[in-house]
Amino acid sequence: MAEVAAMLTDIVEIARHPSPGPEPLGLAFDGAILWITARETHRLYAIDPATWAVRAEYETPGAPFGIAVAKGQLRMVIGFGDDDDDRYIYRFAPGQGFDTERIACPDLSGVHLAFDGDTLYLSQAHNRKLLALDSSGAVTREIRLDRRPVGMTIVRGLFYLITADADWKDHQLATVDARGETPVVTALASIPFRWRGLAFDGFHFWTGFRDTQEIVEFEIPKT
Image (cartoon, rainbow, N blue to C red; front, side):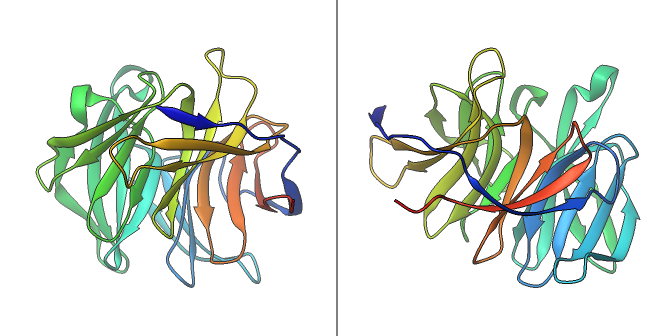
């Protein structure tokens, strides 16, 4: 994989908000609502980002991890078993709830999701991979990474990732352009904390800081 070097400065924090639930992990923005999962309490929250009011709250079938907005609904990784290690992808429709049908993640492994308008992608942090999935959960493409993806969203055809090194340290914000045969990774900024999850609202990025139970709004430093 080709990699583009960059001089890294820290991301620019805009605001911090209290997480609606403990251990925030998955985030997604649907155009009006910021969706946040709380792994510890098995909850999904719908947040108005302008007022930080909780518009709705749902119980999840297991431990919730990453989420993505896909055609007006959500896709969510849910964990079961010891340490929530058996992972499945569920469909959630606001106002209706979760489908009973589910798709097993490849090797029952995966954390974060992103949707590009046609294809659902799953990240595997331990394996350092992004996987493109078909409607049955079969892998149609594999993108290997040098670092562990711990947050993911897609903006204008590019993957934006929060990544960590092999020891789960040295967090960075990076893009992956996988539109060609050889993906190109560009490091954009350094992240000074252990953050998880990533969403973009059209202007700013959002992530979860588990150590302080906060949701952080930030932007990329201007060069």
